[in-house]
Image (cartoon, rainbow, N blue to C red):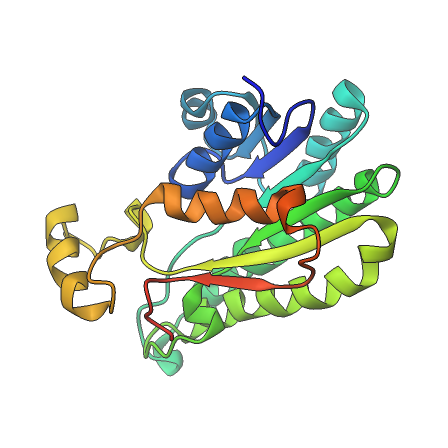
Amino acid sequence: MGGRFTDRVALVTGGGSGIGRNTARALAAEGATVVVAGRDKDALAETGGIPVVADVTVEADVVGLLDTIAGRFGRLDVAVNNAGVFGGGMPLAELPTAEWDRLVATNLTGVYLSMKHEIGLMRATGGTIVNVASNIGAHGRRPGLGAYAATKAAVSALTRNTALEYIRDGIRINAVSPGPADTAMSLRPGETPEDRADRLASALPIGRVGSLDEITGAILWLASAESGFTVGHDLVIDGGATA
């Protein structure tokens, strides 16, 4: 099927579920050859595309992932750095250091390592990078989620500054900051999707959770030529929660 990404090579990290899986499938539907990376081999196989088991917190894994893409295709046109974890859920003074380290390793260091090596491959031909941050990091005020918010705010800052460093190399970098979407990550412990819908009906101005297609649509727009004049932007998609 033809589309905005025909003959393009794309990478989606955290591609085994949720936003990553939906984005990988949407890119493929618009013509891209999609490499999906993550830690769960079976989940990646269910997503489709070309699965590569890799942990973004381990630089050797990221190097191996990009070497695989370079060896097979010789280029990388689109990268969506979606791998992330949710956690914290307690006041900062009660937060175990191990939990802080876990959040930082995946949500921030993982994006740093991914961009570092994606840029290395993209410099020859140009490309687009979209990092997945969070509205909690962008504008949200959520007591108990300070550590998670800090990692996502850092992704936004890293995006803006790195975008200015590489735009003259033909590499365009932006971010999206989703609010609560229809993913397992947005469910509280023991909560069903129906419970979540009831909770968010009053908590969000739009009165509902975001769909995966709404988040993915924004990612694909930022990754496409349609947003060619957009550089270093963090697009908040949260139903008015932080308006």
